Image (tube, rainbow, N blue to C red; front, side, top):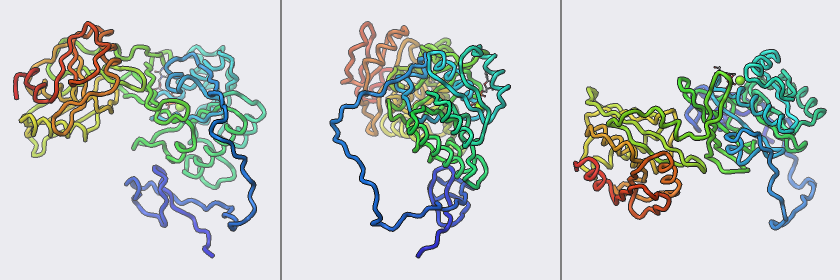
Length: 452
Ligand code: TYD
Ligand code: MG
């Protein structure tokens, strides 16, 4: 018989190890491994009598989940069209980014539209939450407010109140008296999330959990919470910027990768219904090193400005500083420019940035990145009324990307008059726009910058 031993779990990725060690083999994080007590009830010997599960067929008619709109359109879209009853949602983000503000506004909004909502804060006293509500002008919304960290009491209250929605702010402050570990530890967070998610499913209460994110960008202790819930949303933004982006990274009831854009104002978070205008608003006169990318975020086209700076380097291995883009992708583009088009970047520092703090992960941004890099290097401005998009292959060919029509339509709506796109793109939707179709990067370099 094997004796029950405790296991060692990485608090950031959840990998199990046989013994304690300084560095996790799964994700490489240091000092993230903690000891966990084994589950008290071991598996019964196989062959023990279980219960037979009722099976149905796939054709069983099931109505799509009824959804409740909050009235905050940016939030409803990220949720996939509104809140699904009995679903569990995790909202992660850096401390201070505005999670509590967003969820208090959301709770008030859902409550005003007729749902019974509870807001349980484990971080702030009721008086502090009330002060925030006053500042946000939400004092009249019928939200039940509680300040508690003991999950047993919270679950008893939820059971008695039977709300439609409960916000738990935050999961790291909650603790179960059955688990012998400090609040915020992996075992507590995991057990508390498990209790809450199970409760949500069993009692038909939608639950929103707030989770703080560690420096490494993971929901602190542990990733496991992400697997338990139906929907994972990240609230992101740069501290210096007023923009905040709510991004769905997982959604069982809607498309992932959908974004909602907000602006942090003195009176709370305001919706930004036209993000393209916002992300381009800081653009002034045409300058070398700037290219406008017509991208797609979730189901919505969003125009962003990609900025590049190229300067002689004094370092043996020049800098490649990339913000808002995948740096591996940028290295690939630099390599293609060098070996396919004969434009070297050796000996040059390269800085790339997406304006407004947005993160762009589409390969369709390749052409705009190349455009910004070339424009900075050659000191030639790209026409200010031009958008670019297209994927660059390793051979230097340009590949058409999806949703060309939507991209062109959005660009045209915002007053752009020219677009550089890969040849063979389906260019409906770009009526009235001058299209330059290019088959490869060399042609693009020749036409735009007269170099090769
Ligand atoms: P908060 O929602 O407390 O962040 P989190 O719950 O993610 O830790 O947001 C705190 C920040 O938001 C704080 O720096 C102040 C700012 N803020 C405003 O700018 N305007 C407002 O109306 C409110 C309520 C907060
Ligand atoms: Mg908070």
